[in-house]
Structure formats: structure tokens, C-alpha cells
Length: 104
Image (cartoon, rainbow, N blue to C red):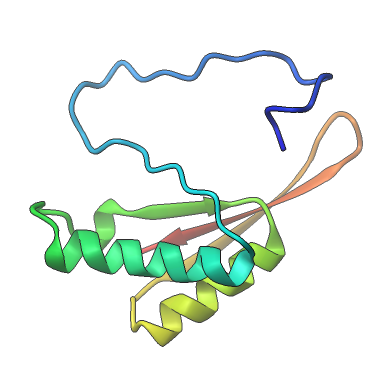
């Protein structure tokens, strides 16, 4: 969605920190599939991956309430402990953005 927005100001995202785990990009069929993918990937990384990750190393930032609900339902179903921090922003264009941050 962001990529095809022709009115968007172009940005190049980067980090100056080296190392870490690569970002995973995945296109899902719907919000339920996205919730399943996120919770399953957290469990995979923590329990089956070759990492020393802890729940506290993970955060999920979501812009859509529908996706946030699906992710939360799947976190509960897969018994992944979490807490939600919700943030509402009013952009200069008078558009509200709701951000849901899941912290572990």
C-alpha cells in the first residue's frame, strides 16, 4: 500500500547498527493468516530457531486494528505472552493513525 502511494515522500530506511536478525517480509492472504504467521514465527524463533532470543527481544508494530485483533487472537491461541500498548496519532493531514505495539 505504501509503495504505490504516489503522494508519499520517498524515504530510505536504514540502521547504523550492525548484526541482528534480518527483517522478514511476507504477504498474507488475510488478517487471520497474518495473525497465524506472526504468532507461529515468534514461536519458531524462540523455541526452534538457532537464536538466543527472548520474548522481551520482540515487538510487533501494527497500523490496522483488524490485523491487530487477528494477531492478538492468535497470540492467545498459541499461548504467547504479550501486552498491548496502543497509540493514536493525528497527522498534519488530519488523518488518524492507530498504532498497536505488542510487547513481550
